[in-house]
Amino acid sequence: MGDSFMSSSAREPTGVEKGWEPADRPPLWFWLIPAALVLLRLLPVFWLQVSQPPENTAFIGLSYLPKDFLAYVAFIRQVPDDGAFVFANPFTTDPQAPRFILLFHWLVGAFAKVSGVSPITALEWSRVPLAFGFFAALWWFLRPFLPVRQDRLWASVLAGFAGGFESWIQLLAPKLPEDFAKPFTDNTWMLYGWNLFASFYNPLWMAALIIALVVLRPMLTPDARGLPVLLRTGVMFVVLYGTHPYTAIAVAAIIAAFPVVTLAAGTRPDWRRHGTDALVIGGALIVILALNRWQMQDPVYRASAGGLWGTQALSVFWYPITLGVLGWLAVTGARRQMAEAHPGRFAIFAWIVAVIFLHTSPVLNGYKFVFLLHLPLCILAAPVARNIFDAAREGGSRQRLMAAATAVGLFAAVAFQTGESITFTRAVSTVPADAMRVVKTLAQKPRGNVLAPRPLGNLVPAFTTHRVWAGQWFLTPNYEGRLAALDRLTSDPKLSDQLRALINDQRIRYLVVPAARADMVAQELTGQVAERLPHGAFELLTLR
Image (cartoon, rainbow, N blue to C red; front, side, top):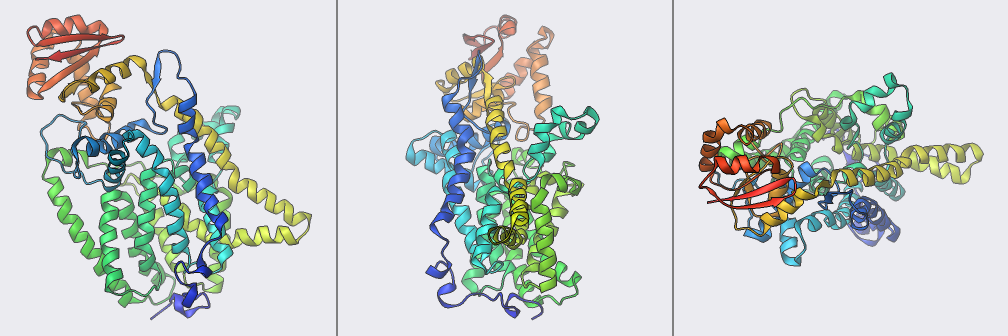
């Protein structure tokens, strides 16, 4: 059988220790972890409700990354608006058939439909059930790896609140010498998403992690696995792909790395078990490939689905900053597991190796995988953290000082990141008030295709039933090229024939132009303009 969990005193529990029986249930205070986490993550949402936007601007109500979250909302609203299960891409007016399968978005949309809340409200507040669902799944997942109950509690606390020093650096960077601060100020995107507290700004990632835990536990531990469990695992892997393909790729990589890491350590893997795992995941991959082939038959989906490949990787040289104290505790924990021949060590090491491979890849946009690195480090670090804080209770001033320094190093990032989030939200949720006036007018108009400049292209599908010709950096084919073409066509009268051709080809019903160009464009389109509605800096033209 090779090295297995069953060969150690850290055996799978029996009798009442299994599952959610009384001996295994977390204490009631455990649920304060997701409660506190979700409260802190929703503070930016609350802040938007009580603060006023700067003059001549409006809040759109989203707390993070509107360029992506507006796309989420545009898909989510298709459920209450159209009853969609398979989604169309509203960020292009090109002919298309619905091909996007987004299970998380559908679930949030179904909640919005049943509850009557807005898609934005449903998205932002989805963090509440997802946070509690994640920690319930985490407690269940941790049992084979951390049979000591206190270690599972520490792993959960670390997963919820441990962070690195990236927020400290961001706070101090303006006060540092320019040459020293430059690598941080020029590469701020590389500093985000390394810990779960930071990652949980995105409810989609929370949903993906829950499903990943369900898939990984029977793959990485010696749980009893009959046919129903294997079938469930295969089905959940397909569900994971339909929720977040990047996490599905990472899970497949972790499962593949497990026997490789075991063999590299000089231990014979359980090839029979790994062979079964390969059949389960392979069967699921066949379903996914068939589904993907069907999706790729639509040219709009095909043009929108190329974001996996790219060069936005994250280097391991950020680890001392982004992992901080947790990284050092995890290294210590890994060394202990090696010395003790802990039966779960190869599974956790395989998880870490697979994510490192993915987030440093020169051909993948590796930053999309880095949020998966934090949890296995928390598992390794938990027993070490427990020892440090137990020693502080029983020891002298030296032990208490060490525990205090460890606590600050681990958890101060939460305060920094929460403050950053509130400030960041106020900035990114702000758009010109005139742009939102146009959107509100369009929301009352019959459905049609819209030609609009930035930032309206990203707003219109999120707040209305219309589609736009150029709207979103990822989902609009040749997004920047289309925006540049639109700018030329609405500013040069010599290109009026091309503007008319575009309007006719894309069946444009509504045209939004800067107010300074409205008279010129209306003259170019003589006979096609049915209505002109000024909205400050913009004018909305309804076409015949």
